[in-house]
Image 1 (cartoon, one colour):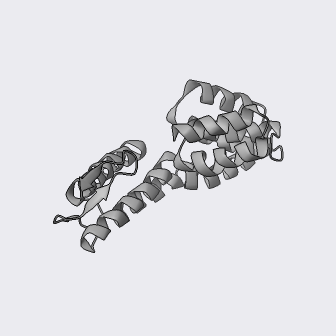
Image 2: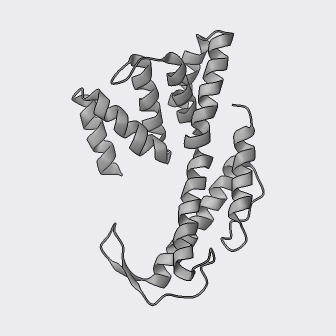
Image 3: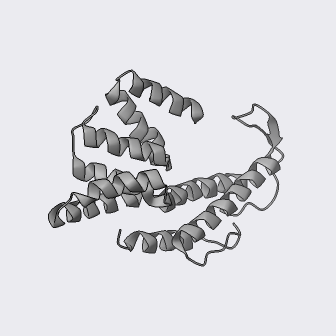
Length: 197
């Protein structure tokens, strides 16, 4: 991840705006990277590598500011202050569209689905019961680990992601992978996304 961020920042600094924009938007913003979401907004606002569009830029700025980062909130507020009522409604609409795909809750929901799919590989169900005698090589370290360790890490990560969704949405949601259901998580996220921006 850090290598990708370094690479895209270098592309941007060299003025390769179109390539940088695509990486910021498609590879980093899509996984919840708030700096990348800010950069997408900035590049859209200034017309670097993409058509200039203050409304769309404001939507990305709003998304980048969702965690309360002061710098991102300041640029968001500065841009929104200049909007009239019609532009604000257009910004709200653009933000809701982005939010349904790129906000933290939506990104976490996607990651939870992936985790559950991986756990279903272990048992043929969405439960991770039982052990697996297989050995897996961790792609990030190259270190071999047992199937039980691999799936245990997924379960642990799944519990943390469930906790993060509960915190973001304010919903009462179990963080135990055996207790929470994907239907329940999806409903919590859908209700959260229906809230006004």
